[in-house]
Length: 250
Image (cartoon, rainbow, N blue to C red):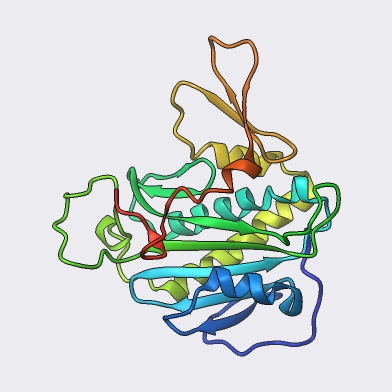
């Protein structure tokens, strides 16, 4: 999965490495929906960012070279990069974990998650024209809700991520994502899979990622691994509150 070289650049207040180009939307914008709408025109490396106070919201357009059945593993690459970016700014020993396939937790509290989209007419056996990886992370808990009322939900501010602006997290994600993609291209996907499953709750099981992105769950009392379909799981966004378009409150 590569970023084609393009000569057209965008000016941005963010310090992003090439080949990223930032497109900023107003607070009422939806980064994921906008990226899907413009993916074919804008091309790989376009990073769409919504400037909100309470959420980090962005979407990245990719142009994979491998068939869609394997390219969906970009979801895991993006999550590994985002998890590493969060860890870089986290207070010491804060636990950053994933719920398969798409949710992100800090100290067991849900803070957000990611989306993955591809063209509706794309075939599993062919490279899609584009992919969109998008993320939403709750930075501040809005409203009058008392702390501790919903212990399975949290925000970065509540977990001690002091003064972490959406721009700083986005810059860290961009650099981390490039490193992850270099690993994928140079050494294969196995290292990325290892880093992703290391952030899953162990639950007495061992995990691996199949070549098509399915989760393989190995349990000591089972002779064969349980297989969970990534494509089916992505049909439902587990962490999203459809009323607020942000992470749900648990």
